[in-house]
Amino acid sequence: MDYYKFLPKTNCHKCSPNTCMAFALALLKGEVKIEDCPPLLDLKYKKNYESLKEMLGDEEGQKKELRIDINKDLCDGCGICVTVCPVNARYCPPTLSGKSPDYPPEKHQLFEVKNGKCELLNLKHCRRLESEGRERECRVCETYCPREAIKIDYQ
Ligand code: SF4
Ligand code: SF4
Ligand code: SF4
Image 1 (tube, rainbow, N blue to C red):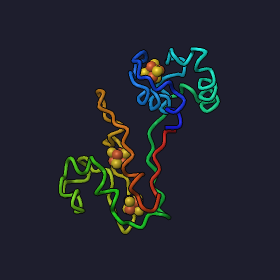
Image 2 (tube, rainbow, N blue to C red):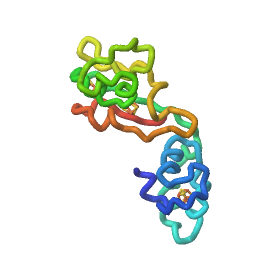
Image 3 (cartoon, helix red, strand yellow):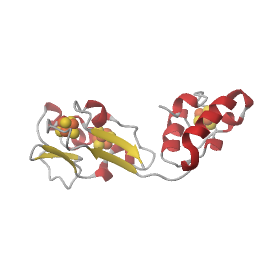
């Protein structure tokens, strides 16, 4: 959202991500440069362009990898991240009612609580990494963790 607020927000479709929200995510991941948004080069958006340049600095255009960090000191093992992650819900609907996923963790499960602490199992199945144009800007686990123990980032 930090990047999005400086984009024209017109969804003019002149960039390859095709919408301003998708462009903001691509900027975050280092997949596009600010100049890939033609309207931003217009004088009308000069201040926005400069703000984005300042925010991105030397890291602009550098491809970044998704990270989901779990702070074990903050985590109390409540399991909410296991039940709210839509990947778990999709492949194992009982998680929606608070049950533990009952399929082998190596299949798709993202999170598991072990010995009272949450562990990240399969980052590659996160919706943010789904390919073929189906990538989602999911942030459910981070949003719903009551202890603010989950941080989603690109590094
Ligand atoms: S070119 Fe710029 S204004 Fe147009 S959709 Fe892409 S980010 Fe938005
Ligand atoms: S929701 Fe947060 S506190 Fe609860 S198990 Fe997951 S990471 Fe830990
Ligand atoms: S970002 Fe979404 S899909 Fe990825 S681990 Fe968190 S809740 Fe699951």
